[in-house]
Image (cartoon, rainbow, N blue to C red; front, side, top):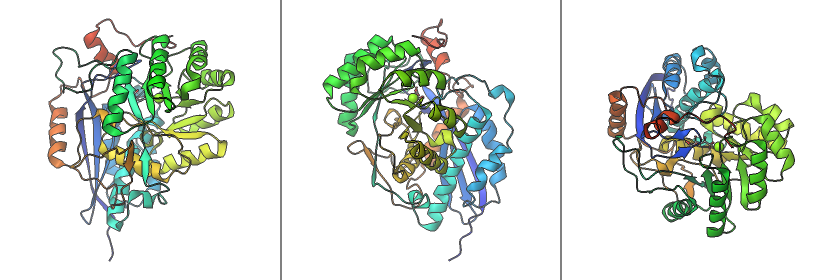
Length: 431
Ligand SMILES: O=C([O-])C(=O)C[C@H](O)[C@@H](O)C(=O)[O-]
Ligand SMILES: [Mg+2]
């Protein structure tokens, strides 16, 4: 049977999804956060889905990029990155400083383009897999594991968004001290079976956060623990924390901002350092690896330009003896499926992956993905193995249409100012 893999249509649907009041060093998550759902339809009527960031700066690139794909083949994956280079990035979008929501290091035109491409690459792979009757992991060379392990992503959080702010309720409660963090970890374990834990730090003074990690170590002896202040600490503070809790850490994630500071910390501690801030593109690899600044890179297909680039990153890490883990921002089930497919193919992925998915009560799928013993089973169904719920998609899109623009760009500092009008993004190092 011949198949027509020509892309006949591309649909882009920006949505707003509920997000709990999770705290990080920049502020707090908004009650609703933007995502972009990408659909690629072949001439045969097969639809592939992808998901990426939905802020205006990504939409601006996604729209012209979508126009370039019509008439091409869904199998033409190599061309995606080249086509993306043809899409102009408005200079005002390239801030030259850490971006407000993504906490992914300094924002560049390249990073914006790669994040857009990732959603389209996943949609093309989904459509191609459905056309050929093959799962995405098979298109990527085949799985080396049947399930992918995820870690519990613990956050300091408030019980709810500020009074009077429209939001969805969550049932996690508040967590603003060690006891609250341990209770949250127990809830993660009870609900999903996770056995490794990452605490998002950079929120409270380091002594409070190390106390929370100690409390976790006592409550879950021997379980892998990570602490990630998103570069909020000085080199000296990072070293102090490493000395205090290094004995219970699997790794310390981005304690200090930027490769030179990370290299200095790494030179003076035996605690492995991980990053999703100083190595986020191939261009940043050489300096960081040759300086020994990081021992683990958190891959993220949204950052790196897709699933195939994620595999290439893993190969580069293997070459340099650097470990691989996986980063996550707020995402839905399409991305979790994509993360699981690529993670299943990476032999040197030896750390449980991060995922925000448990924090997301809303999705655009007919069936949510589930964690069993902290693991997601790798689907062998054609494509990603997920199905779009068009009614939910329309509902969440309507929320985006109804928004006056306040929430269409993630801004954790602005969300914090609703509760604390004097809040300004802390300068780095904060401690
Ligand atoms: O460094 C990380 O792991 C992240 O940046 C993940 C997320 O962005 C997280 O910090 C958040 O959403 O607040
Ligand atoms: Mg991180």
